[in-house]
Length: 131
Image (cartoon, rainbow, N blue to C red; front, side, top):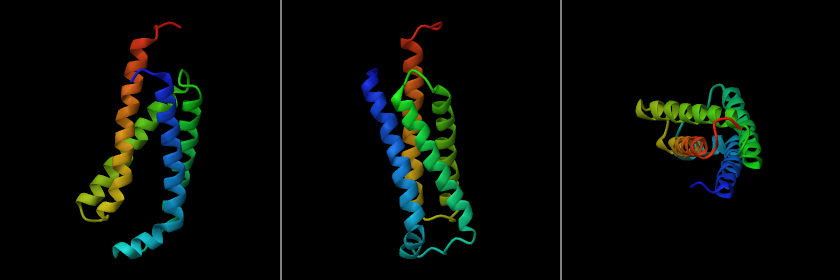
């Protein structure tokens, strides 16, 4: 997967996923919780803050997609953030505090974190050290 155009679309796809996911969950989390038989959030402001950050990180992924030769710090931060989301969601699912449905976005994030690691590794191999 060394094609620059493919990577551009991978980063742009993740940006769109972040935007859609954050807006969708912001507008429908209460309805989803009712459907799954889960309790409503006590402090919804933390969820709203998290979803706003997911949206903002999507902007960063879009910037990377616009110029994949730059903004690698955003990619590294994204790998850490996405892996963290997966770990937190997996933990809370395993201990029974979250319905497994909420692990789906974590699996998507982990998949993209792995793809981003592949990108950084393949980019490092194809570009000279001093450019």
